[in-house]
Image (spheres, rainbow, N blue to C red):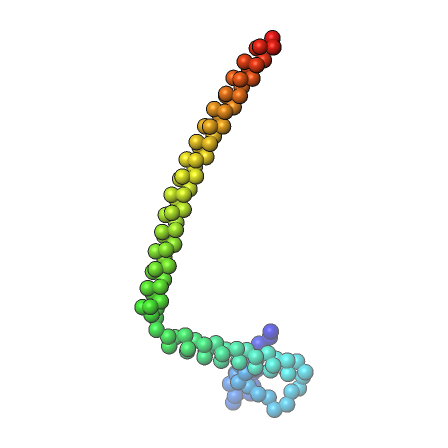
Length: 120
């Protein structure tokens, strides 16, 4: 994208290309610049319209949406709390399973020693 400003004689001022329209195009690149600037001007115009629409909207959320948002937030907090409780129970269960596994291993080792002593 190329934007240029054209300087005319002293009696005229400097204009951005989207406001300046030469009667004849002395060079083919002038047409490309005109297309680019036209596109830029159209984009700018769309942005200005969009800004006007958005700035006209109320700054606060409607009460109905606010209530829905608050209810959703409460459900999320409740689920987080339940997940924390579940996590604690799972950790306790894993710890108990590890203790049971250690006890079983100790019993198996004890029984293996008894069996091996009988054969010696």
